[in-house]
Length: 170
Image 1 (cartoon, one colour):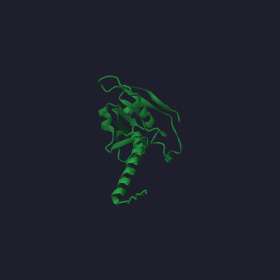
Image 2 (cartoon, one colour):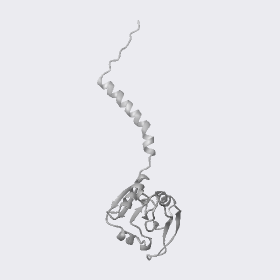
Image 3 (tube, helix red, strand yellow):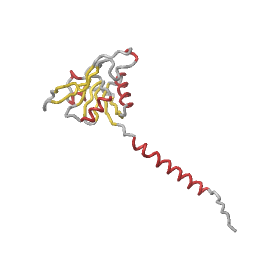
Image 4 (cartoon, rainbow, N blue to C red):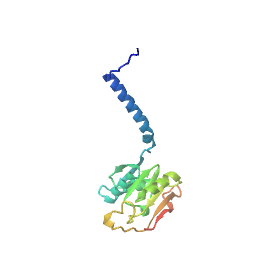
């Protein structure tokens, strides 16, 4: 005659089953978590009261950057990094060893980091309406043309030259 075995579920057995299920679930999720790229660190200097700078930073964070913000203005850091005033804007950033001045689109920052040109960085001089951070409802959909300039040091002094890195025509 064959005996039928009956298993009695104990707390220990239930805990083992739960742990095995959790381990299997984590093993399935792990590749997806690992596939998400880490945020790219960016350091930004701006005026504490500038709303368009805050908007630009928010756009950069939405695009996968992680910002450290200094509300101390950007004139001193811009001068220290060797960017002439004529190329200035309301905020200055450093990312991957490059200077990013003004309302540069996140895609151009990514392009800069991928191409790694021999340059000081990129800049959108002034504050063109329609550029990232200058494109809110207050501007009524207006988009002025602007260029993202590649800024190249020409020697040991503070002189630089520029060429168009990307052009936006509204």
